[in-house]
Image 1 (cartoon, rainbow, N blue to C red):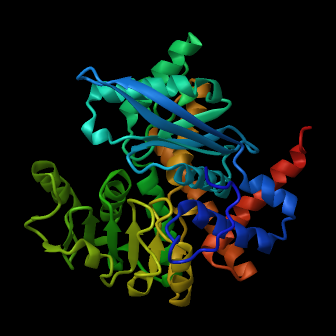
Image 2: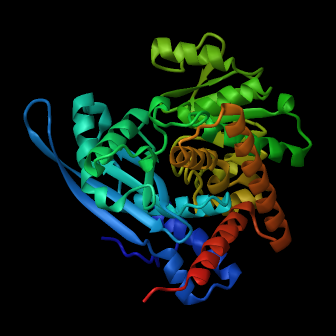
Image 3: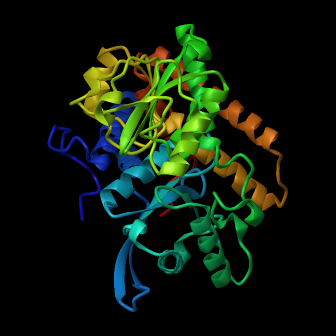
Length: 427
């Protein structure tokens, strides 16, 4: 097991290690806040790490054992909160980093959650629905004692969705012997899900991008946007931004990219992908090399897929004014230095994509109240929180002479540290 306190400096060899990346940002923010060594240790160290082995009988009768993780980074400000991903490349370091980012993300938007993350090492694309259900239910049963509406509230993440959340909710409820809708968020509407939740992360990205455009004196109609990723976050951001008047000039996906300098018809592109299985070959755009589309001249670049897409090897080639991080950890610490030198305005992930966890918080509140809001109220409250948080981070950055990412970390660390100090250390 890797050390809980990362000490290796960031280098080309370990640049893409998410745990070290999280630690590097933490270290700088903690130093600037003059946090003492003891508080740094408390804030850095996950509260609990759970590793489970999950036996599943596959459809052909074979038994397979999968490894699952749940890391609860902090519960100082409230129950832990964070998604669960199913992927073959899930590692404990990755889950640790994502859990810590959730802590800081919830603190940045000032909602009463701590941070957690979960993952199961598997390839969901080769598993049947029946196998995925067995895997989900056994994983939920294995971590049952550590989750709950007052303890830790999971949500969807990479390769999981509302169906997986429904299985989790049902499994937890069967063990609890009563229906517990608030155990997960991102559920189907008929099981206690919230209006506006599917659009929330993409909508939040649009909201903070609009605020950033104001700083550059740009209107949406004059803003050229490149979006990397066309899944839930990128696809929803593209749809909402196009409806708001943004000019989406390129979409970049794992199998290619499309480009139209006059702006893509996002609805037509989505229909094309549904019909063909790919965004490429779209009649209203030209195909591009996916590795080159990221470097098109644009006003806004919105990476909305995976980690580590902006690195020291390509950051200098970006030709955007604004980098809005829809994905978690899309930019490495070494790339941050280059972006700052090149005067790129970065909206860091722990702010930019916090719309999802914010509306997850609304869902949790509604489940616990047993009273549900209309979509306009959800969106209005989301905008209030995202705009207020953006203004607070940018003002903090200006006041303290730091970039937006370090400002966001400083605000988050300060809020979590204040909660710990007020609570004291139980002994």
